[in-house]
Image 1 (cartoon, helix red, strand yellow):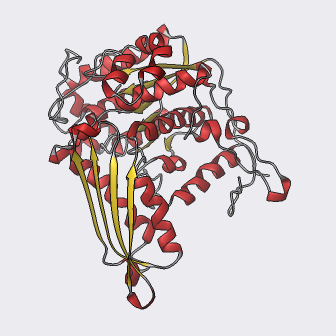
Image 2: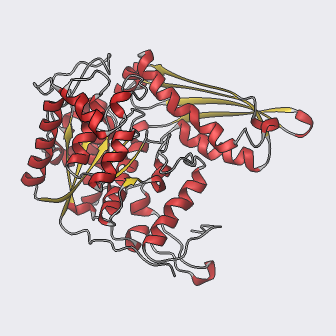
Length: 434
């Protein structure tokens, strides 16, 4: 047995704050409310449905994760957030069109009660959106202080013992780290100087960490994957994780690429294209915002296939990603993948994938799991990058100079082994078997 971690009990209410209360956040909230009412099953959530094997297979110890580790109960969750467009979760859900009225009507009063706070919003970072419900203060330091005041007011009004924040907002325009991001001191000076390199998502991350609220980044924005934020999370003792929810096409890549590599088959090219019509698609129709997403999605293949180790098989791969805004499709994204592989004596073969998915249906359980696991990490005394949660991200943030793992199955083992070790159980290095 390994030595267990001292984990504080999940007593009291847990507030889940989402910057961005659009399709993903409203679908997440509605699903939790419906599950609490007994009218839905939280399909896709490891925290609610998955089992974890303990010891050897013949021991037949296979409890559910939520029975093995002290997670917050769904009945103790309280929801809040910010949005520049939607006034509450009900209107956001109806506008998004992800869920049918038959699912929304029984919980409409509760959804309507989740009122969005005015957002920190700057159209320079999301040119295709116009913010109507935004904070009147424009100075970045004042915006950060306004968010911290929102957090404390929400904590008090909802009698929350703990809070977590999961970014569910739009993808911001492409950005690379600059001098203002290199230290806490530089970032705070940048807030005072209204530095143009500080984006809204970074102000949310700063406000969360200064309020000792764990922060998980569900978009490909630069937010907590910056030296200043890593330094701040360590100083304040707060967990961080990111980035970019791994939902549709990239999830499939982390399934298929390990299989190609396991058989030592070669890869010539991987062409991916998508059509979607939700707010995310509209934002990504701008080239600068798409570039942010593209960089996140392109990193998966090389990490899994290790071209530096297998140059003959993966040293010259053409990897192309496209996203096209097509309003009639709404939140129901369609992705096509053409995968050109080769086998014995270099003979070519192809794999074709057509994935008709629902972006927010796939993202909602990720938001739930991240909220519960980030809260668990905080109660376990963890701080800094929670690399064990890479399972949920397209571009997982690494806790060390060694790049994070992208192989979905290795990520799953790392996640479960972290839980095992925290609870004093031995890690499992082979079959999960149930």
